[in-house]
Length: 259
Image (cartoon, rainbow, N blue to C red; front, side):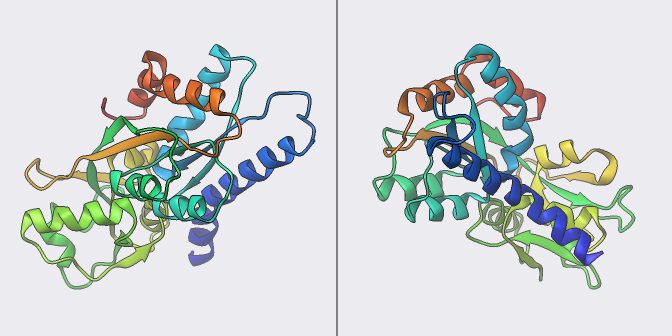
């Protein structure tokens, strides 16, 4: 079971890394050398399914352009940008990591909020442990998965505990929100705090326990073109598309709230 969790948790990161390798290969003269270079988008892992669907619509409206993605936790993405890894667009799950990229001089212009998200408690199907709220996560015998504090979902979760007046329970420290969700999906955790959109895309493999509005934290997702973008015109077109009616409709289908 642990190996299954590890493979599932790494699959999104592997997909993102492959996308970047393919993009860079194309720029160096690979199979797509006769096409314009793709837009390389560094995006929070919680956007993986929505942006995958959005890319098809983007290609339909811009047949001469395409996008490839590196999906990771936002804190890992901004670290990669700091280290000089090539990217054209950065879409973060929080404003803190976007501000870090801005402070480092990595942005070509001001970021723009393109979506919002909320938190839920993901539990085993049918909620066999009877978890009703944040206070229940501190019960003896429960195994809880949380993202690390520097990951947006981890920081939001800790803000939710503070709003509820509840101590943060003993929990794992996951690298991104998908890894926390996978722990519940494969039975390695009884509960995890994730985004509402993550539970929605997981289908019947988990059950969502909503947080009351007074305990919830609304995540704001910013997006920006990067200063060192190799394809700045296409990068701006992608950002405009995400913020436009078609992009917003796709995000809405996956449960994201309008900015």
